[in-house]
Length: 288
Length: 77
Image (cartoon, rainbow over all chains, first blue to last red):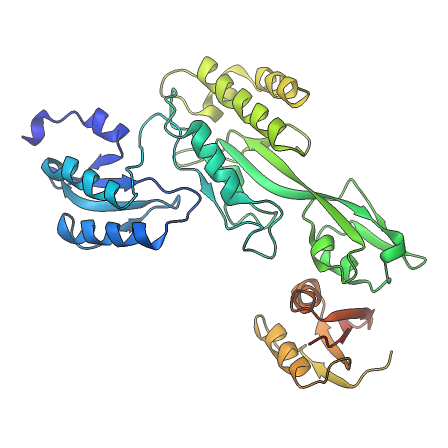
């Protein structure tokens, strides 16, 4: 039976072949690393009933249920759906959108990562492309979600403004800044904009809110962290609004679709044809 | 700067730096000032912000010019 299975099709549905013939590991759709308890319960039930009583946590916030018999797959998917859980994807398409907890939970966060992950998921998840394509969203420069290892990485940051009248010259921000961008001159703080990385540690640490932060998105392109390792690169200034952000992510993914050879990752395409074309497309999208 | 109590966390490592400082401020009454001596680096980058997140009022960070800093923080219940 297992010999007649179309594994390519199964892969599109998140089912990956295993060493054990006739069995596979079913990848589940997880967005931004969150799964509610209702979903967890049904996953546990299915893993007990059809799998080997455990799940595997993937490196990109996914959950896989190993040891699913391929003949049970339809039944397994049906049971999962009842609990609101659907299968994930493998193969040449947009993969799980990963995210850290972001500003809604984490004191360091600059942006609402989970909402953004859901929006990216609605916009792109499962889209067929020449090769796999990964999005990752991280809330701040601490980079817990490792933005630059993705084809498109989005990192929260803040453009900061100093409100002299509210400053009590306590000196906390000077030390909170890890880039040495701030210094105290005559009891007032001066910022070296060239050193600022938009980390917002001044905003977060200021006891009188004398630093005001305007949230934005720092986007990088062409990261991979598998067979080849490349850090994604930033080609644009910080983006201040979501509309522009989506124009830019649309431009990146469309550029990849139009220019990549089959089975070629984004970075490989850029190395083959150069970065200028992408930069041009991104700048056009950025400028509206 | 005047203060009511002081604590030295220069011999502590994270997360005990802030835990020790937090315990010290718990002992104070509302409005009293705690002086916290801490090391340069991670403690001075993070401890002031942790006090802010707990709702206390930071008054001043003093560079002792010996690789340590003293943070003055007013207790807010």
